[in-house]
Length: 640
Image (cartoon, rainbow, N blue to C red):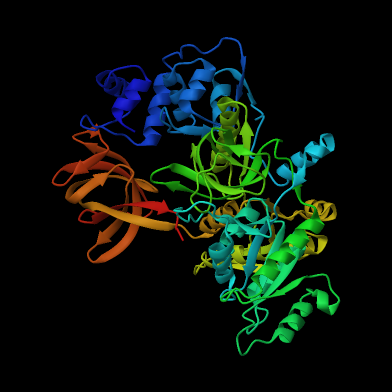
């Protein structure tokens, strides 16, 4: 800490502070501009006892504090001078500047020490979560069912790599995308609408699974149906199976598009059989799954596929209220050089309009512009319409729910609460995961296999030579009693991602002392495991050589301490430094400098060429002529 900063906190000049420090018995070099934080804390504690804190209430007062706030905000809420608050923080071992943020626990300790009764503010709003839009629409429909009209279906095209997803999307984009004006520039906004027989279909442009997985990781499921693309010449592959499992677990209707039927080695019967092996029974085999036979490259069968999608949508009776509460889901978002934060949104209820006031996650603002996939400027966007908006304050996350508000203040309150909650998580105590020795044993349960793939990929990057991550078991579904028994027998931890814990499993885990950690956001899961692995690594001990001192005289010898005198031959000798005793060419022992003097005055260090006297702690008797090799050791956590 700077001497000047400490002097300001004690409301005195630097010169006065230096005098007070010496008067209190501390040694700080007259030339020093900085002192270490530990010494600063000791000085502050000592001098604070002699200087009463102003403004501290005589009687305890009640104060409510949020999950996270800046030091300046804390001082304002307490009605105290900022120096009083910073001083109390330092006394509690927290070095924070006026604009730095602290968590509720830290703020509560400080406020309590200053005579306040502290309680935590219960935030009225948080991030809108899983099922919010569906629940709100059910409430609207129960009150005004006549306001709900048929809306276009929202479809994701998925499948194994190189099976033709992108080609199919491109074919429909080039031939079927709504385009009534000339001269538009195609925009990649993650979603677009196709017109077919006077009706519309909204496609999510997610050929690489990543955006879809990101939305699922945040709890969003905006798709009404999935088109599974399977190559006729390649059959069912790992990502094909992943999509099948995803559809089953999310109860999302599936339409199979068998692609590349024009290739000479196409084998449709093999594809149908392999699909049946994984529980997808097509209609012509007596099942319920529709099939379209297509060539994405030539466009053959694409109209048939669109017919099937519209037929499925008619059966599902998809409806929304264009005049109701406007809500949608963020598909993707980024920071634009020209527009600032922008977000691609699919409207799911109501009608989004220019100048609407919105909030999505930690972002809020008044919509400044709206464009569609063809670059056309929009004034309004009804349900199932995909568009890119600008005018928001921050970049939201994929899967965040966008909602309109009456005033900018209301939207800001919602977004600020979400942002504060995110910052509070950074201060939260790291979830401690149990481990046996240097093995971190995990049982992982997820919502869908795509999530499992992402988690395993992230865990593979944590490999190191010291800590071994053992995945004892993994799978999709809720955490059950068998998972708890397995974790108990192997001293393991159960990790649940976007999945539930059965009541029986929760009771058994409590009885057995098994840790179950559940997460809704994948990066939080990975961050917690990463921190635990780092904590398990053996810390590095760093040695810094300070100098050498030749011993000229021995003044006193006791059982485990001595008083010696010598000359600094190289570098310096420091109070508190460790040393090795070198006699000739051999190291004969070790010790610690417990007190140092120069010209019979206590000092912290003596430099090269000067004589000194020192109290040392050592089990080895030092002799005149020995050389002390002085060094300091510090411990540093290893990183991955």
